Image (cartoon, rainbow, N blue to C red; front, side, top):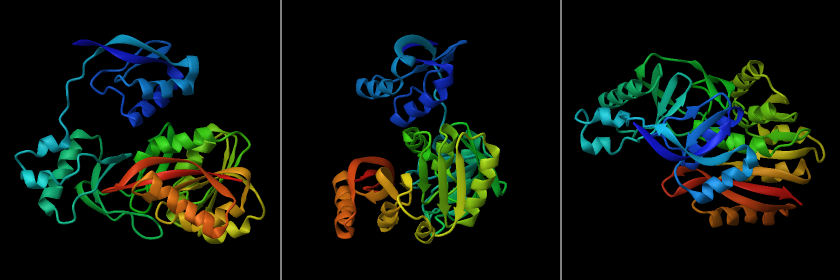
Length: 347
């Protein structure tokens, strides 16, 4: 069945990037099949004047809003639909609807007290709807290495996989590093702000989500620090797997110690993606930034105002020459708690 829909007419080379942004904004129509011809991709979207206008500003005349006919996609069953009749409604309501896919692995956060037989059914249901070879129940992020405990609930045990984000390949030691596919759009958003020639410090790089995106897009140099040796091992492997414009320099160590080896106002940009601890490192980051440099700090809070208050308290207490430019909610963290990005400028 064909249906008419509002859509974006996008050059092929921009299609994947625009699709990811539309997904992040929640305005991609998943019920209609994307159309392609030799030059353009037609992407069906939900009516949202404000969000579409914002997106069009990023691309100018390259992207056009229009209407077209699309093939309707019948609704597919989700993994929770497959559990109906096998699991009680009370337990089913406690099981999340979403899960992450990292290469050939699915990760789902389940209640701690969920019976093992129910967890197994969840894993088997996920394998029926996702092209994965293993499903793990994951814990919250733990310890200095920021990793999760994983428990196999379906499929075969997997130690390593390749995860792809915006065409960038990441080598992942599944049980030994932190990875969150929900940050893919954020990785790209920050990378797009960088200019050729910049010197960037990625203070808590993990496997290189921000670092590799930056080096893929720009002739910039990124110093990537992480205390987890397995994360640095993955980053080194990933560098060799990708054709990068820029340079990534992996450093294994505690950021608070490593940063002392950088002397003077060196960096044009600092990324501080460690939401539970980044505020403790803010003073250190300011000491190595140039006048006018950007700092992207990730922290946890219940509202924009609370986050601004927390950050400005540190700025005042430490007499730091920086100012808050923007605060953006990025991800849900816990009930009524969110991860925010705070954009700061060295003044």
